[in-house]
Image (cartoon, rainbow, N blue to C red; front, side):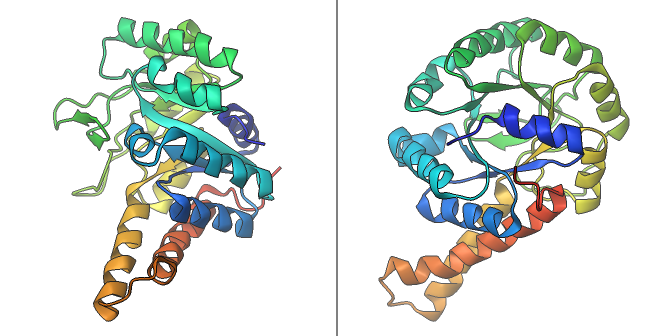
Length: 284
């Protein structure tokens, strides 16, 4: 049975580790993530973006996630990431999705509160948990782009008000990370993160963790982050392994053969990130 992120993250928050979230796109990427989680006995969050839902289809992706949760030995949450409207995710909620993110961070504070509060009221009616975001991460995530100079870090006092007024279950914060690849080492504001943790009691989420050092991620966890999102660092090795395979076997036509090294390459990254999040052995 699929879990809510609230269930997984409450446990992580209480015990001082983070649950890793991995973006998945199809059967091959999803199975690689789940197999790694099973090997490490780690809870895991499978995330799909609006683009993935359009590409692979709601019913297909939900069926894959539901099957994984049914047959797997570890707790699994299926999360609809970076959606901008509750209307967009209602079809998935009706299918049984138990976790959504409504990203209204590009809106004014008042509009962000209004949009996320509406999402919370709707999603809770389906037994699903809701993640909101306050602050803006530089970079591109699906249909949302924040240019350099437009990013904004999360204000701790506004975070407190946001959580209280929306009733959101988890909060994504901006402390200096970015979506996509980093051009230089990110400079994270740990003092800000500590103040946010003191201001709110819901689990905190770190977006843009691909490329952030293990040392910095673990410091974020120590300061209260309970969920760490990974996407770009999965896509790169998967694509590189496919390219390498076709260079060596230009006439191969069997997907079972060329997807195998790609799955293994992605799985290795998942194993590393589970260790980084300290969620190994934490399956309930």
